[in-house]
Length: 239
Image 1 (spheres, helix red, strand yellow):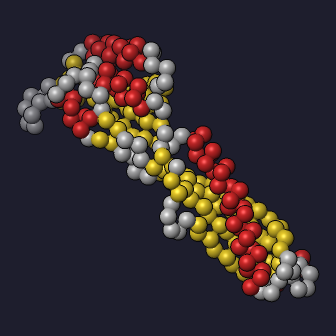
Image 2: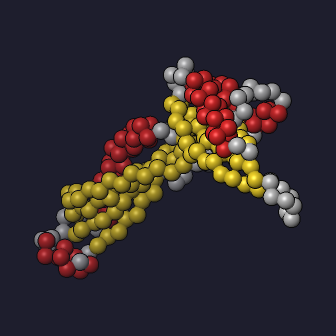
Image 3: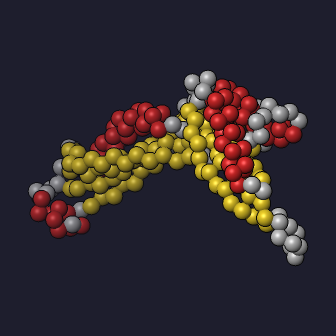
């Protein structure tokens, strides 16, 4: 996990005098000031989950034959995946439709075309990529290959950011109070807003180019980084 460089923390301090909000004027005794501010902490975290989506495509003049071929290919891919416990497998969109393959202006040549996808997901990249290579060797083609950050890892990072964000928010409130000649600060409200951004997934193109050279060539992927952020908003009373 690598901390971002400047600006590591972004904060905005807004000072609201008693004249700023009539409701607050009624709530705050004379000599007290309401301070509203926010602190955002960001950190870059290495992505830990690899996701690959492949599809099988077939074409046939007979719709039933076409569907049997797709079903057989999917069964073979699922059977190959059963022994890889580290990889979660799911099937995706299944489409069969009729199309005209004749040149424009020629006699209609109607054939059936179909495809179905399979998605592999896991944190063991080596096992997943080896399985992808096996499935590619069955005639499947790659739809998408990318890394992402798992929800559990993102939540873990956010938990670590929360305490430091709250501490900085309080420190900033105390600094603002001192600038106004106040000596005491009480936190009245606290709002925590967590958000996660994703960097662009990294995929090595040569992994798919190797398919033309070897039937079971495993693709290559490299993890990127995702940005996890957490914002703390507070209202503090300085007196």
